[in-house]
Length: 380
Ligand code: PLP
Image 1: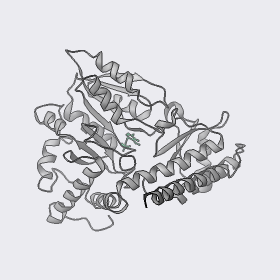
Image 2: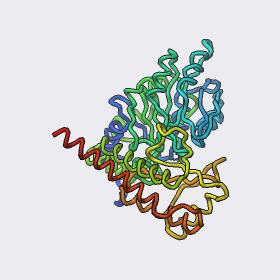
Image 3: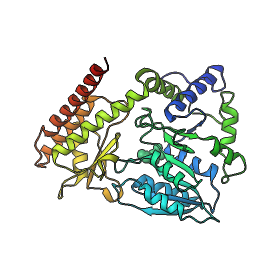
């Protein structure tokens, strides 16, 4: 990325555009889905997803299980879509039985046009099962669009757009894709593209897929793209897809997340995520003990150890720390983080045994390695 800006109408740039589109398809898990790239962020990508396929007055179904799932409803309301929002506990994953019942009971004359889902709720550290959501939609015989925010999961937690028949994937550059912020990214199914092309959607210009598709076909964009970001994205996609391999990337995230969860449990603290089967492999949100302000811990960790932790958002503010473990990350960096949290606990007299989390995390990593070694030995 650190290079002179190139002409975004040159042959070199056309090749770059094509390479990025091919790499994104691999990470989306699609052969036919169309990547869209905007000089924007995840929020812009969300707006782009909605305005290309939904009209004012269209009914959409969403579930509120954290800041970002609630946010999809907020954005949808701004455009005049009729939003049915189901409140859940923050820490819960989207309950697929409930989704199925609601879709079965839907109005035959004015049905939901879309179901809006956040794959990985970054505020609570909960991952929803998109395959099960698709099954529930099929079981209800409902043909609403399935629109999924993957901002904090894409490139870190397996995603299979074609197998799960996801209509639109929403993402940004700054998390699992290991880039700075600055790109809003979509993966769009043929079905969603056709809907938009047949006069669907709301008034739009910047977000409109039609000119993007037309220009991308010849390696161009309808307006100035984030040129240098695309060089970075091509390299990030090569690292994920060609060098490490997506299966290994997902396994690494699982291994690192297991280590963090082992530490949290050794500290005797609870995760916001209620069901371990839905625990996120990219972020762990942890309740701080009663009587301790999590913001104080976060500020202390930053000032004393240059350790950047996430805070609780919305109603979780002051009660939760969030440990991120995604992207370009390895075992030693996770151990550094766990060690820094433990030092901060000690400095602020949390009464948590220093070293307990580090030991549990190391044992988790060693156990994962032994499991891989014995699986390899059994295979030979
Ligand atoms: N959705 C999720 C799940 C997120 O984690 C975020 C940001 O962290 C967003 C949406 C918003 O993305 P952005 O901040 O890139 O606009």
